[in-house]
Amino acid sequence: MPRKARSKSSTGIYHIIMRGINRQIIFEETEDYSQFLESLTRQKEMSGIEIYAYCLMSNHVHLLIKEGNEDLGMVFKRIGSSYVYWYNWKYNRRGHLFQDRYKSEAVEDDGYFLTVMRYIHHNPLKAGITNELSEYRWCSYNEYINKKDICKIEHGLRIFSNDTQTAVGLFKEFSAEKSDTHVLEYDDHIRWNDSEAKAFIKEIASVQNPVQIQSLNKELRDDLIRICKQQGLSIRQIERLTGISFGVIRKL
Image (cartoon, rainbow, N blue to C red):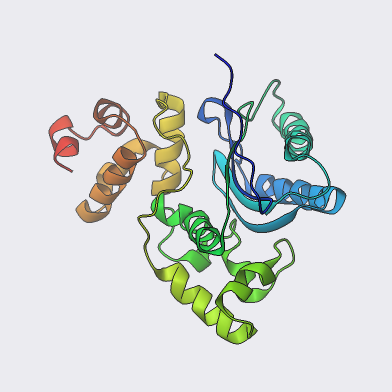
């Protein structure tokens, strides 16, 4: 069956998702996140893309970008090749790391631009990794506050106000709001294998073994189980990996 053609954006702006193949973890350590951002920065300088927002999660990446002087397919091919070569060398592995085809959606107006930007920045909150946007190091939220240099923050801030200080304040207020607007999402209907599910539980719970969440206080334990269910882990799988009973998990 032929692939569906990508929707072309009249503004040149797209929301992009790059996924680890079969939910493969693509960032194991701090150095890995930094290396990917370095590769992204090099491609920005080479191809003229404008980056408005990003969020690096353990097994996927969200980007809000505007295409530059070459096709985005070529840009992401180079980003992927550069990072995968380094990652495979570091971890002594072979083969693909990213899903073959990145996902994309066109961003046609300022309202949707802001909605996508907020959605991207909210990924760590949704995954339960942090309770404060400013605490997650690997997304661009803090660039809009502290004026770092990967993102072209002026475009987004000008939508709020031409006065930078006012714009930053309005950006914070907007970012703090919840939104139910549907945007292109990480494909969470794919089944998790036990290795992937185990790594996810360890990450969100900050434990060495998923069984250890049994020893957490009940409120935190239940919140972690809810996050696992929301992300597509089956009840039986959570039971198998954590040792928590099927009945308890089903009620949450």
